[in-house]
Image 1 (cartoon, rainbow over the protein chains, first blue to last red):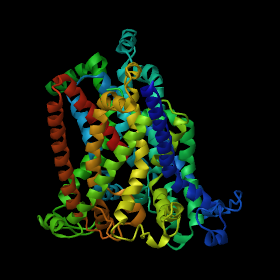
Image 2: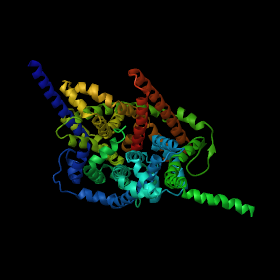
Image 3: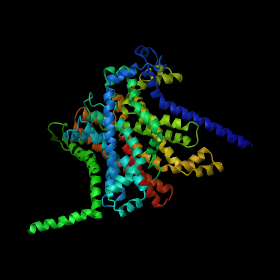
Image 4: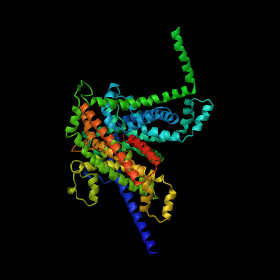
Length: 284
Length: 335
């Protein structure tokens, strides 16, 4: 009897500890963002006179958002980001699924080598590679060129290749064989039969790749130097470095605008983002 | 005549071969692999080779180059701001240990039924999806004197006068930066761990609960063994990741006040001072170090696992493959 109540008490204490931990770490995770939201709604005088964590007088003061949007030329940024996003997703989906198809369906000398080449490439830290890549991009006239940047972003994308290969592994090979018997060639098999089946994997990897591309700023800053016409959403935030650097109500508004698309994608595609990340980690 | 004959004959067989299964196979392989391999070559292996070459020259991106032999490498080791910057990696290593521990703890909690679990998970994961520049601004704001962090600490009863300047004070600013990295990635680590824990058969937990095992025992005997692989992998990744730490100082302090990690210094030397040769040598040196460290760690874990349990070699091989694969995915995600 006694041990029973003790166990119960232990359970309750553990439950309390659990919830306190969850609430604490959620608080830690949201507070930097929440403080930004609060500040973004403040007028200049309000920002200067009140504490940062004091709530704004009006939650309908969108002035900062409008000013930030215009000052940082974010309309242009959204357009460029959209062009980049669509092109990169289309191209890399084609490239990735085709490569995965060959690597998964055909046994040939060099299959393992190619996989290792991609694997090794993914281990190299990107920042280090840019030292020499900059010179190559320069020679290919791909600096200050949207197309150049798009091509760069399509290169070596090991994550989606792995997601596709894994998905192919689960598509029965007898499907290919019966199509071959019916006289279909490999291109038909790939485009008509396998690609439609691959849709869930394509969606998953597009979401991951999409978020990554949208958030990319290092190469964008390096290779899209003309910030007035070639800014992406992320790099348009660089406008706030310098003279505007202390107007945090404006900066916070810009920051919030820039992360809205990611937030929307996250809320709508939460499950896919989680499963995309854990795929491969779970299925051995 | 003889000439045309020798040319046409293999040509005919070539078109025949093209129509055959083997030919079709070769054609589709060629068509599907040319582009990805070309991209891989141009954007990874070519710069890799170029960089190796650059490291022996004194040069800018444009203009003349002068061969200097191993001088750049000597500089990497003799200049205080180059090799010495690797010391900062220790902060980031410490940070990733903390990060992994937090992630593991929260993943254990969330893998059981918890009210509002999805909401908590979402809130903690979201920082992973914020772009780097936004993160830079958010934390410049967060750490400014008297702003967010100081206010929160004052709620907890701290006096503002006793608080340091989080980004300026050299005793503390690297911890502040590491904190942002932990903030950004613990939720993502947690999601990975939850995925691994969920892959364990649910019946195991039920059986354990029926047998009267408490949470701690369940963690030790069921959860931990099942996620050994992914934890190992994360330890490996966090050490190499610490050596190449870049983003927090780059976007928040720009390497000022003693926060310049190795890569931040390298970035400035390459793209601001345009000492491309020296920067290349720095990159090569760090790549070699990372390579060596990775191999040493793999050997170490192999040794540890072998001693811990005499598992059959097949499973070990499977695990190694898995680790390599996940490593690739994660590496790609970070890059």
